[in-house]
Image 1 (cartoon, helix red, strand yellow):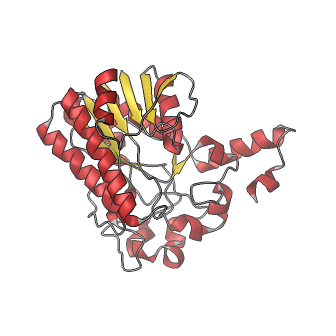
Image 2 (tube, rainbow, N blue to C red; image 1 turned 180 degrees about the horizontal axis):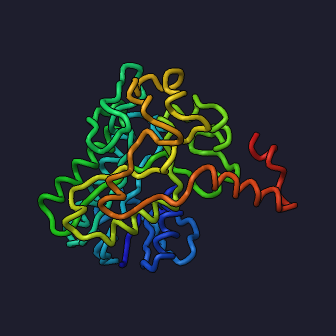
Image 3 (tube, rainbow, N blue to C red; image 1 turned 180 degrees about the vertical axis):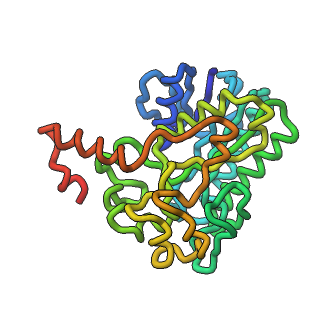
Length: 310
């Protein structure tokens, strides 16, 4: 497929573009500044400008669009700016895709739409799946809810398949080796201090597994994906101990239902993606962190693991 990926220079976008290209797709990346992605036709475009999305889609004539562009971190900008930017970008891209008759459109949402974060929040059930109520508690989460409803709008009114996915806390390949995550901590620090990972309910997702999910979604029959949303995360929790042992101290909003999370079971259920698409994540912090540590220790030009993780 010829696929336009918006936000192609971002943390998730770079890896997703590489993964889809490796799977044989022709990738056109759209972002304000190119990232130098091998095998990707990168277009420098500000999708907030009038008709920019429409011109891009008309020029490329893609088979599919994966929409990632937006402000990706809650509270990283004024609340009004986050809401207006993310919703305007989605509206422009989805409208352009619908107008051009694009056959597949997949937009990135977020687990934050269910509303966790505030002290008063309580999970309706654990593990959390796609049936959980959506109660956004900040502008970022609200913008993602608007995106989900926009996707559903087009699934009712436009040809082709429109869907969304809720990627868990995205970890790029370089972050396993000690690069700071979007919150400024290393992955090792998030594991060593459960309070850091509890903010996102111990969820995470290797960006390469997000790419394999997108590939599976693009290949799925239209009737299985049109108007549907999926949690997409790792098959285990980002914690050295079971969440059942951690939630009371670090994530009380999960409630007693979290006692049923045995072993390494994650808070967010990914069974729908497996059942509908046959997708399962391939990577875990247990394997990726160990692999990255071994690679660093084996390279004499890189600093020791201890200094990289500090």
